[in-house]
Image: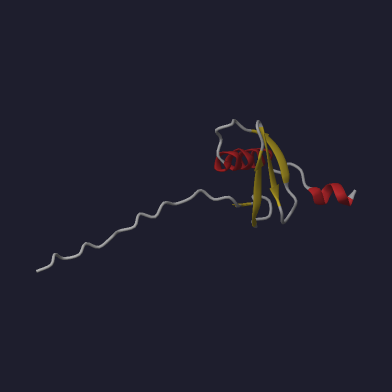
Length: 87
């Protein structure tokens, strides 16, 4: 007689997000471009943009948290392309 076959349980590993929600407009359109010591955070929908210092080991999630903290601390957009093109 044969043995009963065991069910294979696959472990799903969650990945960190690469696109984030913009604190200014609420759209999921914030991309992060990471360089050696600086990171550029840019919203594709409203044009909100900021440049932050980031350590080499910093993950995009960490950079996004610094960006949102800076945004909510000032209470206004850091810089917006729509404002600069309107003038």
